[in-house]
Length: 79
Image (cartoon, rainbow, N blue to C red):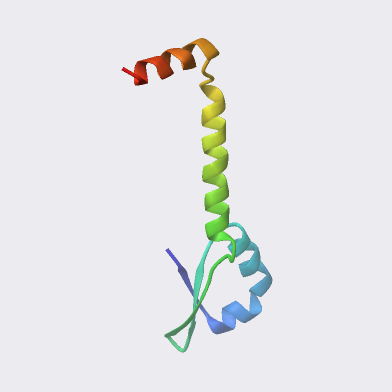
């Protein structure tokens, strides 16, 4: 969920807001109560995809399959 912040606070706290955005938070900036802009990380989607790929690789490493088991699986699939 986006945290709502006024334009004055956004201006005065910009470095803090940018650090928080880098950490994964998102903000909606308002001007006199009217929604004006959303501030989100430009790499949010890429970061999530990369994390999912890393988790899949690590999960695969935890369950190694021996050559014999792989041959059995191949043989079972041909029936």
